[in-house]
Image (cartoon, rainbow, N blue to C red):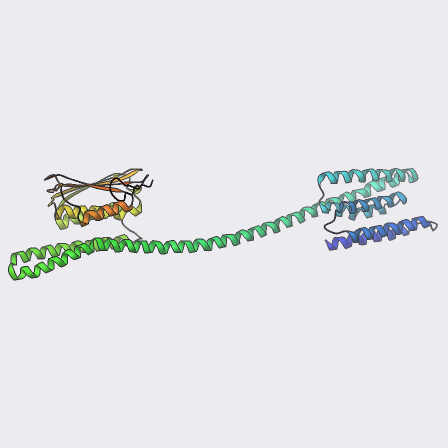
Length: 400
């Protein structure tokens, strides 16, 4: 902008000096007019500031330029004065209405100059002025193009600034998300460790406690009855094998890569139970197992494991059936055996753990049994609504 300012000032001053050569017969009025015009140009450009309303300064430059054409008809030097003014005017980027008004005013002034030139010198100079005025139009187009270029640069700078700010904001958000993800990962690891510790305590710990009791009995039976001692050894082997199976199941649930599906885990569990306990087991699935949430997989496996163990140990069952039904709203699991059953049985350690596991996922579990009619475990988990109950049956708190 400074370079354009000095270029325009230089062009106007040189044009004023060139007008000195057109003065004839020492016409002091024309000398005074040239000096005044140069002074007005200089003052007008020196007083211009970016924050002032420059439309008035442009109008002054235009008025002085056409006044030179009116005072000195027959020469087209005034058109040279209008060229830098045209560039400066369109470079400012005035509103369209203002630009049209100024262009209309310039057309009227130019028409007045042409009429005066025609009256004094004829058609030749009028045609020369018209052809020279096309250069002023060209300068106006150049000024408008420069204005658009400057606007594009300003827009680009603003966009770069906005992109920089967005990048900084995204970087900050990314850092926060990274910290949040790290915290979630740590909390998930802690929750998983706590869950696995509880599972091991509830299953392996229970069986190891029973194993210690049986070992103590074995010590006594070795002194009194060899046959009873042999039976106790068999019980200890069974407990140790079951505890080992529980440990293996806990390890498998910790494997996040290539982990077996819940269906594969239940199939393997029922197959192992048949091989180890000799109980015929049937496993049926209806619906899409993919609807089962991952968080529910260990609970289903533990429920089946505990139900099968109880069927053999307490019910003396020879056959069990497992039915898993999957819908978009509900997951139900039914384990039924042909054992002796016991409708008055109290909730033991294993059954209480089954109820706790189901309650943690908002599910319900109930037990049905009749004398010599087997034992049935019915567990249901709603995928649409969850319900937790606390205290006696008449005081419940639910969440949905």
